[in-house]
Amino acid sequence: MEWHCRPSDPGLAGWAGKASVPCADSPSAALAQLSRRELSVLQMIARGLRNQDIAEHLHLSLHTVKSHAQRINVKLGVSSRVQAVVRAKELSLIG
Image (cartoon, rainbow, N blue to C red; front, side, top):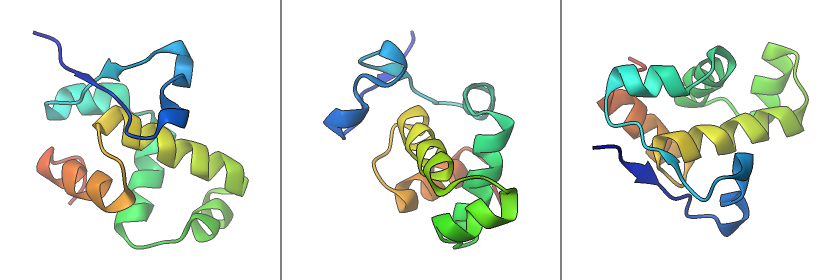
């Protein structure tokens, strides 16, 4: 059975041309869905860094960091940074 998550933000529904994306229901599925950069951003979010701080640390634009954060939420089937961190901890993606 394949689970699908719908983003709670209607603006994200068309992301990547899909109304839903496979939901990360296991650590291996979540790791497969998250890019290396998205995982780096997620780890920094978990440490409490602001988007601007993450952008400066990773040498990215603020817009790029925000885009990564939105995609992380969609892929993990959550609607906030806090929920993303909680879900990532549940899946043992971050410590």
